[in-house]
Each structure stands twice: as structure tokens, then as C-alpha cells.
Length: 220
Image (cartoon, rainbow, N blue to C red; front, side, top):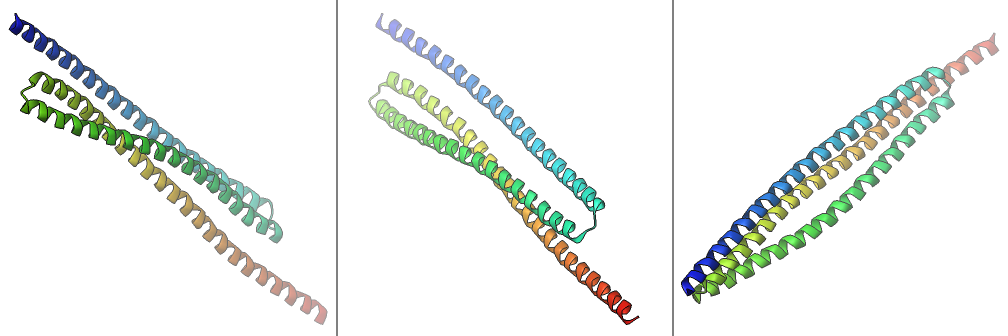
């Protein structure tokens, strides 16, 4: 009877392990589906941001062309140059602030995931040590239960590895976006600087021509 009970207990534990394994498989599948969903959503957001930036840039270009066609007065041209640079700078600062806020959120998520990952690794190590002791003492029932615990925490650790990798990639993309924004401001500044130099040269030429014409009229 004792052997029958022992077999029944082992059979029950085997069924529990199978159920637990299936649950872990389902959990991993859900995590993978969630990861793919988040990745697709993130890519869509990136495309939307890029399209919005292109649209804004095109609108700004058209606006500048229209304003330049409206008037060729020096003061107006000067204000237009500085105004365009100011608008681009404000927009860039706003964008950088958004990216920094998103990065801060991801850093918090990564810190929490790292703690969970460390805890899962410790639990696996502790359960493995207990399993070795149980095996040495020939307590095979305990060793089998510990095997299930080890498998559970190992699965958690794998899921957290995936999560940490995804978060790391997202942070890298945010850093790349920030670099692009800063590069755009630098390029805008250089363009404005070049235009201001050209503007100054043109004004000097106009003043010289006006002065020469005035002298000619005076001499006549």
C-alpha cells in the first residue's frame, strides 16, 4: 500500500509539473506576443514621428519661401532669419525634453527588471543548492519539487533577459533620436550663420552702390 501511495504521489507530482510546464509555455508565448506588439507599436510611433518631422520641415520651408517672396526689405529678411532659427530651436528643445522623459521612464523600468532578474537568479542558485543536498540525502521527492522551482525561476529569468534587451534597444533608439535632433539644431545654426554673412555682404554692397549714386548726383 505504501508503494502504491508513493507511486500515486509521484504521478500527481508529474501531472503538476506538466501543468506547470504548460502554464510556463503559455506565459512565454504571451510575453513574446506582447513583445512583438510593443515592438510594432514602437516602430509605428517612430515612423509617425519621422513623418511629422518631415511635414513640419516642409511646412517651414514653404513658409520661409512665401515670406521671402512677400518682401525683400533688409529688416524683414533679418528678422525672418532669426525667427526661423528661434522656432527651430524651441521645437528641438521641446523634442529633446520629450525624449529625455521617455528615457527616464525606460531607465526606471530597466532598474526594476534588473532587480527582478537578480532575485530570480538568486532563487535558482538557492534551489539548486537545496536540490544537491536533497539528492545527497536521497530525498528524491524534495529534489523533484525543487526541480520544478528551479525551472520556474529559470523561466522568469529568461523572460526578464528578453525584457532587458528590449528596454536597452529602446534606450539606444532614444539616444540616437536625441543626437539627430541636436545635429539638426547645429545644422540650422550653421545655415543661419551662412545666411547672415551673405546678408551682411549684400547690405554692404547696396550701401556702397547707394553712396556712389549719391556722390554722382552731388557732383552733377
